[in-house]
Length: 370
Image (tube, rainbow, N blue to C red; front, side, top):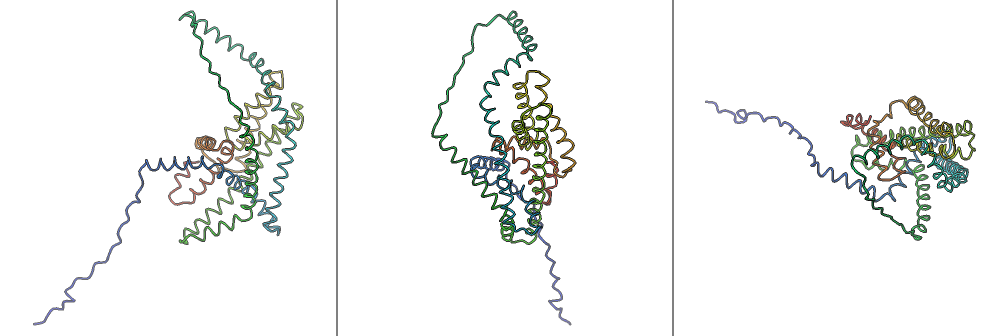
């Protein structure tokens, strides 16, 4: 009688199957909302620290394509960055000196010009005012005339000499910080990126981070430099039209051309402000209605030509952003950081879009911005 082998009777061990990974847990919506509010408050409270850094990064992105071109010509990066920065400062100072006199004259004469503007606007709106008075008379006859007068509250604001005394040194320190940070971002920005990427433990994440940072640096630099060149051409063309068609002095035309260039960085909002300013300038400078409307008409025509034809042809649709998302971003960053926020809103949105395009599973969010 043979004895059965216990080893043979033992069934083979079952192969261990990998444990399925469940869905990634998500925090409640209330925590997400609180985190967003905390980040927004932090950005607003630390704007004195954050804005110089963001402005320096913005100016460094403008100069990086020129620095790369100089490096191909065997110019060291340090000297190339110094040349680009000094050239930018020199052009800014020359433009500021050129615009200082007409700007100071307009600031000094603005109250008188606005007082003379009121009768001109009253003549244009006289039919509407007559219709309003007729409607008010009909309402009084129908419901009886009210003798109650509204209470007027007069507020006075005391001038603080200490505040004006401390504002100038703080502004000078902020400008100096932006200049120094711009130079250091131009020279040492790439080294800082490499050392930060070297800290990543995963090689796949390191490769993805390198691709994202390189895409952001290249595409944003090209985008910001191209938009700056387009805006400069728009400003020069507007100044030339004012000087040629309206006979405006060259320094004053350059003042309004510079304003048009700066406002063009904020889509929709900037041109709208520019049209209102041009209407006020036209009616305060010229007596004839058609001639007074001409500066705003020229500005609107140039902006339409640039926004609908020139910029789409040069940049294509790669950097296209949804108008609704763009307006919301302009409102948000304008509320947080004022004029500087309007300047930085579009480049920051483009950065977010580039990052979302290159991350797995984020294509839908990238399409949401388009």
